[in-house]
Length: 362
Ligand code: NAD
Ligand code: TYD
Image (cartoon, rainbow, N blue to C red; front, side):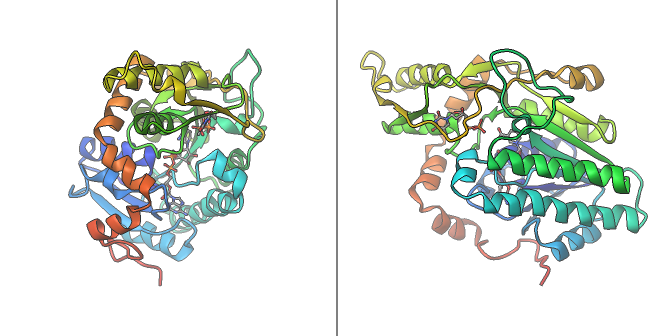
């Protein structure tokens, strides 16, 4: 198979490629990424020289480039991660969320449609769209999201993801494209950009910077270790039923404050600062996020029943691995946070403004 992975230099995409490329040496993986602030080729060092891996720098919004990739590599499967992914950024600047998540997805779908359907390359294709549980809106104290929950997105991010889900669904019903959609809960683990809750809190705690807690800190998320998400995507990619949606979750609800307290304790202990309560004193309750969803929780019965997937990593183990990774990779974090990243990046990879494989649409 020739598998196009979009957004493969981001958090989940890079974990996915680091897992899949060595495992499936008979398949080619083409990583298409625009390398926005969230894309980082350093995440892919372990596979960059692999014979079954190619990187192309470019945007999913570039239709000629997308067409060219489908033809040049004879793509049969797409795993579509590329997106703007941070809720807070979608509140301060929604436009790019519509451009990338909605319009970009439509461009990619059109290239897939042209290549697979119009060029009559129907056999064994699949477009796997990676989406979020945030499309379902917010839960009260009880209940779970499932594949039958009506969409009710509340943030510009979730609205843009909901729109892209609808387009993927429409290309299945209208054109007969083989698609699957996954709606996953919050991921955590290595290589997550330090703007999301868990890596931000770890990095700030290490640096003795404030830990901003939105509202009362009692909002609930269902946390899933990123490798478990990657394994769920692997299942859906190869064994999912065409046209189906699969909800993926960690069966692991935590209030934000519970996570922050856990991290404070772990980091103080690892840095030998227990007793001083250093990190505890960094906690700062701040103005709540606008439209802040109260609770997300997933009922993942369908993917367990149909595909035999369930999370393997318990939260204690996953969070320990994550803290260890961030403590061992403080240079990675600091380069992103110090703003020296672009310069470093250009020196390391010489990539800025260039496409590695030389494939351009111009
Ligand atoms: P991320 O922000 O870490 O990475 C996004 C990647 O997409 C980056 O490498 C970026 O350079 C790339 N990208 C952005 N715009 C692009 C464009 N126009 N063309 C090509 N590449 C572009 O995101 P993530 O956390 O890895 O999330 C990946 C996907 O999974 C997203 O679609 C997100 O909605 C979804 N998701 C994320 C979570 C989570 O907890 N992080 C949970 C459920 C679903
Ligand atoms: P985040 O990691 O941004 O994921 P999402 O909003 O997509 O679920 O935030 C997770 C939770 O943590 C959410 O309830 C908002 C909260 N939060 C804070 O309290 N402080 C912070 O600095 C951040 C980034 C998030």
